[in-house]
Structure formats: structure tokens, C-alpha cells
Amino acid sequence: MLSTGALRAHLLAARLAGPVATSREESLRSYRLFAARDPRALLGLDPRGGWAQPDLLRLMADRCGVSADPGHVSGPDVIDPERTLAGLDAFAGRLREAALTRAPVLFGTGHPHRLLGFYATLAGALSAVGCVVLTPAQGVSVDIPTRFGVRTHRLEYVRGVALVREPGARPVGGATGAHSHSPLPVRIALGALAESGGPLPELVVGDHGWVCGAGQLGFAAIGLADTDDPAPFVGEAEGSVCAVVPLDDAVRSDYYRPLTRYVLGRAGLAG
Image (tube, rainbow, N blue to C red; front, top):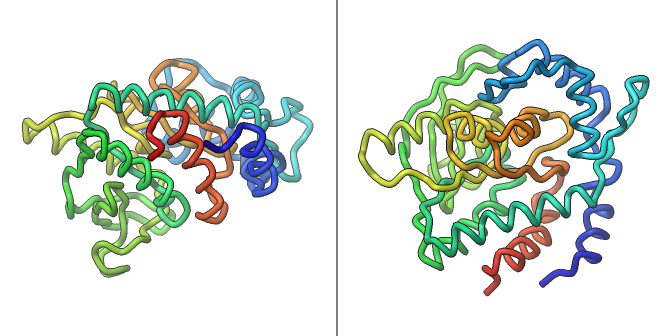
């Protein structure tokens, strides 16, 4: 298994943690939107607390390691690699529990270009030990609000991981899809499972709206999140999300492979 020290060094070298590509301006803008209850920043979460911008800044400093100084308004944001490692351990612990109980699991991502391989490898490992990797509502249309207006997308699964893409954008089964923060896909997937009477997921794994949307509906959810996505961390603080790993969620896809090996080892799923 990849050692903690080796992974820490990789996190910093790949800029998954430490100074990251996400800018302070982007993060502060997201905190302002979340404080204003803008759906683009809520990602399907309906927070119980007031969560003004200063509250969010303190939370993100605690959970991610960003600067707590409100006067720091520009430059790259920073993620503490120790918090990333702790998040990965908690994330792996939940996967281990699912593996031991052969729990049905649902995977979904709004970052298919970057994170599909990470999730797909985990889905394959859980399937190999007897977990049912759920793929509900395959091919169903989802009308998602975007900055260009409402656009129709299609819910698809690639190697057991849900994603959305605009019809005709890529062949069915292709490895890419649309970048999306929307909770609508996970709501549709979970609704389809409920209507069919099939097993519901005992764990939802993903990012953006997949984690927040599932957690808001009462499902155990774990995932990854960047410094400009406060919603999963608010969900974790309020108890609707089980575990969140702070990291840059938009680096090269191959940079996540060491994280995959680490998580598989910690979860007892390494082959």
C-alpha cells in the first residue's frame, strides 16, 4: 500500500493539496453565493444553519486549511495535506464498511473528465467483493439549469459510475461527460430505485450534487470537494454528509491514481 508519507509528497507535487489552482477569488465568490442560498452553490443541500460568509470561511479554514483571514482576497487557495489525508482515511473507512456488509452502492460524478477513473476503480473493487453497484435510470433525460439556460442531458453509466452528457455530445459508453453541479441526476436515480422496488444504496459516493443531493435525502454519502465548494463541508458539519475529502478536483486524471491505491489499501480492497 502507498505510504502516508509518499502520498503526502504526491499531493503537494501534483497540487492536489498545498497551493492549488483554485483561486481565492473563486472560493470567496462561492461562499458569498452559498450564504445567499444560491442554488448554484447549495448543490442540493438545504442547510439548517444560517451560514453567513464569515461562518463559511471559518468552516473551510477548519475543514480544508484555507486562510481564515478575511483580508486575504486573492492568489491561489491552499489545502492542508494533513486534512486531505484524514479525509481519505475517513472515506476509506466508509468503503470498508460497505465492503464488509456487501452494501449496495451508487457512484456518480460531476467531474467525469477528471474523476471517472478514481470512482470507477473503487466501484470495480466493491463489485468484486459482492457489493451491488447500482445503475438506475440509465438513459433518462435530465433538464439541468446552466449558465446558458436549461439544457437537456442524459444520465449514463460508465464502468458503474453515473454521469450526465448532452445528447449527441459523445457516443454512449464514452468516457467523458458534462461538468455538472446539479443534484437533479441523483434525485432521479434514487427516485427510479424507489419506484422499482429494488435495493436502495446504503452508500452514495461522488462529488458536487451527487453527495449533497443524496445526503439531503438521508442517504449515507461520501465524496471529494474543492475549496470553492463549501456545500459538502457544510453537509459534513451538519451531519447530512458522512465524509468529505478536501482536494483540488480538477487536476489531471492520472494524478488521482495514487489516491485510488491508498484508499483501496486503507479500505482492505487492494488486490
